[in-house]
Image 1 (tube, rainbow, N blue to C red):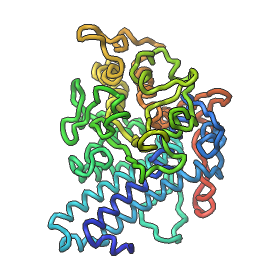
Image 2 (image 1 turned 180 degrees about the horizontal axis):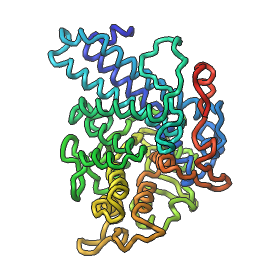
Image 3 (image 1 turned 60 degrees about the vertical axis):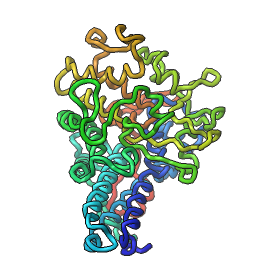
Image 4 (image 1 turned 120 degrees about the vertical axis):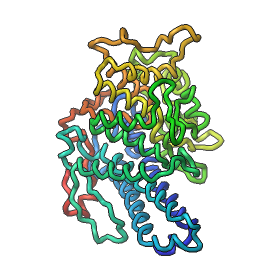
Length: 470
């Protein structure tokens, strides 16, 4: 369909919107691989197949500019999504005059503004996601290091390859500009889906993640307060009524469209993430329909005494085969009635609560009672009290902490437990400039090491004369 005809009818415009989401949820990007890479770089998973196609070099920290399966493919998928978004934005602007006359309804111009807000949300998400792998953290000298080529125009041919890298700060500025537009123009609820399409609270939630990565903790508090009530039970009081589900197991095994899920990307048997991109393929053991690419490291977070054996996340979301632990968040393996159709998670409400808890500690101090309540809301959900009058053995109080285990340590540990296999571990290591821990025979990677961030792909170096290497 040519670009003009693509905006001739309401249904064709909607097709372009859906197409943007399809690009962002590509298996090589946020439909699977991004989440996997975000976890296997660290030390909570062990590689079992030595398969370069499924991230062995990511796990081993042996990536090069020519690593096709990860460095090149994720960059390409990310920028393909960004360009598809830019093509939509340019087309919507160029065809704006059409939207005030038949066959469009009288209010379609407002609909297109909301679609544009979705596009800018997706562009912000895409740039943020790429920054976490291919550029130094913002906290390294306030974003002054080289970031990414900031492509904001529609590219329809090969004539504009040359573009220098913007600074990390400049890319974050664009991300925040896009998210501000998204928040101002997205609907309070999205009639298509409040889980798989963006609405106002989706943009606000992503802003809390972005500001956390920038160490702008006061801004995290400001944004989170828009969608988190002042006291427990914590929930969003405007827009989509986000709240924790009573059981984390049902978030993954049952209703993947619950109000806890702020954004996740869906798949069907006819619209899958693609071969060797599926989350269940990576994490489920072969006896349960996966390929057993990665097991859990018994010396990783599983060994932490604060991750109790009775924790629901340990009991129901981890499985053991011949005493080898595997993640079981994604259960639709090859033997399920709907193989490889687990949603790919992007953001959950529990993340917003923990983002806010951390930001409160960093701005108000370790004695923040609200931060403690937010932390316990996530933790006790999976470690409930045996009855209404007996405190949960997992619940933290002031006496739980010490110089060796502070409330901040507890929040960071809770993030590691709660989002195991959801791809957030790399983001946390990067923003805090922590070493990537050693595991098995693989040594630690220090923040000063070249391999702390991924190399710029050889494909970009070959076609963009203004690009610089990491």
